[in-house]
Length: 112
Length: 110
Image: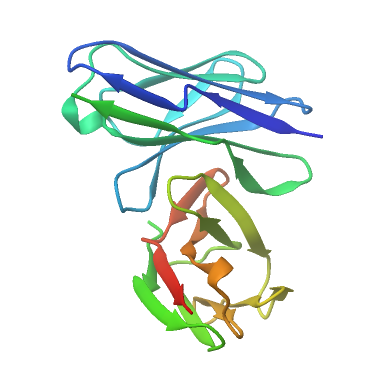
């Protein structure tokens, strides 16, 4: 069966520090991969998606970047965090036989 | 650009009652999704509605889609406390992008 792993679960980082969040999917190949952000009490905003290795589409210009170094690995990064980067970050995947995106457990990021 | 609006945003109801959450979307979307989110948790897929007139049911939840009215509904029958959560609808824009509504925070009181 397919599973999605996301870590860390929580993170407190100072302003100006770098960020790296990792997401991996198991049990499938060539998934579509997504990074979403959810601000407190709000809906979800798509940040990046990827349909293949090295293929990244950005939805919102911002302080963040994404990379897909392997088929089932998706990484969200920042060189210097801002206070406004705080939020709940969710990785998701979709693919053959999965009409809806399946979400990871999320990372709660607090920038202080 | 697709916009998705839910109402109500907050809903407090008693156990045993029925209620409906509405999801309106602005442009053609060939699929409509419903998700559930418990506090501090991730999103769980509930329903995928693929065509006009689609109706899906799971336990006390039933979702429907009217593409002509650009409206989806999530109906709760005889609510129980375990259904307390935030419910999101989302439409598909293009091939990859899910556009989410603001969410409806549902609280079911004994």
